[in-house]
Amino acid sequence: RMMEDERVLQYILMDDDTPVGQIRLNMDADEAEVGYSVASQYRGQGFGRIMLRLVAKEVASRYPHIKRLVAKVKPDNIASNRLFESEGYDMEYLCYSLDTARGGIAD
Image: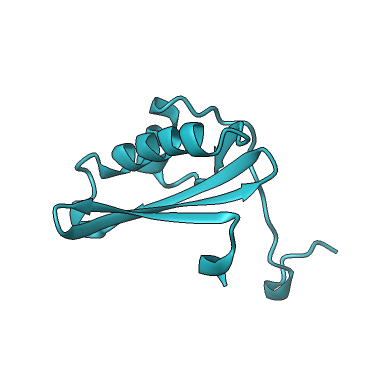
């Protein structure tokens, strides 16, 4: 379904003939949520930064109606948090969730 959804774009970053990572955009009105991953053996080599920069240029040139790129990053993912901050992304809020199926609801 995702591949057929015109609001979802997915790109694969290649190093020569080797796929090293993927980045996805979920577009909604004037913003797009960014999600990316780098194959474990290629982490720490700058591929995440390359993908963020390439997708920002792609959005600016092909999707000018998109005015904001947003990303949800877990607090313990230090590398991704640093990467987004170094690329000019601002942290706007923290998000909390409660899994009601596992309990944890206060009396």
